[in-house]
Image (cartoon, rainbow, N blue to C red; front, side, top):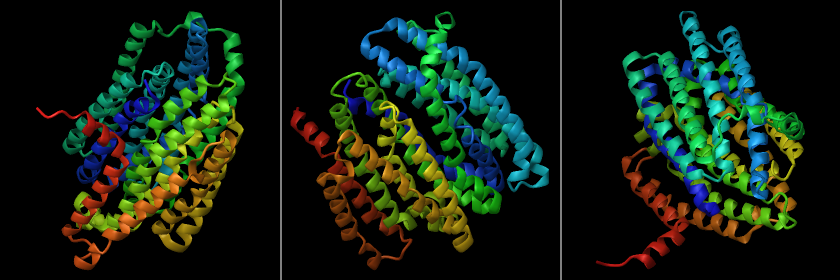
Length: 489
């Protein structure tokens, strides 16, 4: 299966989740209300602080299994996998327990929660603890699938579990107006997803938990890499949601909810880049032992950078140009007006981070985890500065622009990897031709604002034309192949 085909299967569940999310966000906000919606996202935001829950073991196991598969060492695959399971299960259980205890004890003190909702918030943290365990351990099995380059089944199972999670959750929110039951349902879906993946791996790869295959020497072999990965994950967990964590302390629940709506859709867009990270990581891992690693890594980087850059540039320009009318249609005139000042800088920030996922995914297989830690920490520290200055001088809108400014670190990460592997990336003429073409297209359609008011629904015409023409250009190769292969009846 080609790299792009692997990416398509990997991106499918994220596209489905993003599409469902566009519909579900206003529904959840309406059914739960601003205060309950904010409470729900207090728990989700706090979950981000536990992004280090497996301490980097899952990434390490994935890398070493990938290298072993590349060498044809099937016994080593079983030993790496069994050794990882021996540590991962009790480790994630302890982390989940810690999440529940810390969240229940300190969550009501940190976030702005009405006294009558303190018990509800604590209940959500307890349910969130179960979700955390099954989510991270399920991801452990998903890494096993991707190490075998089985992105097709991985994509299909995640599509099914995402739909199973979100669609009934909307009904639950409408029926109960209570985020606790939404959290409980999320945990149950995590159990079902884990069971399906474990059964598939047992049948397809003859790999169960493999506790008997665990070896101390395999754990020692993975220890140094795991330690580096853990440090990076810890920094990412601490700083990855620092803007929302700080805002939860500073801002009222309504302002936090409005910021969260923007960061939610931005995060969904960024998560599409996770589909790129899997194929990039595991294919780069398989070349780790080759003498021609440098040229192979460069080819992987350039292919996936160009694959993602045009789409994220389109998302940034499109949302910046047409967000008034888009938010009016999506959220309604009142809520859309409140979110409007936040959406453009937040979307741009997440798109920059998403493009940097390609370089971030290569740092691990190239054994540059120290550099990864440096960039992650620098981005987090700059985010703290941006949030502080933004809140002081511009309130919640200032926080959005402070967050955008902090993303310059990820541009530096891209340049570092480009120089490391000898790729083109940002220095390619093709990249800047894409920038020029999309900017000219957007500029040609912006005079629509001269014809209609800022939030007129007629602006959907140039907005749709913008998206359609840009998407057609980005898909020109695939469309040309369809045309050549089309045979009239």
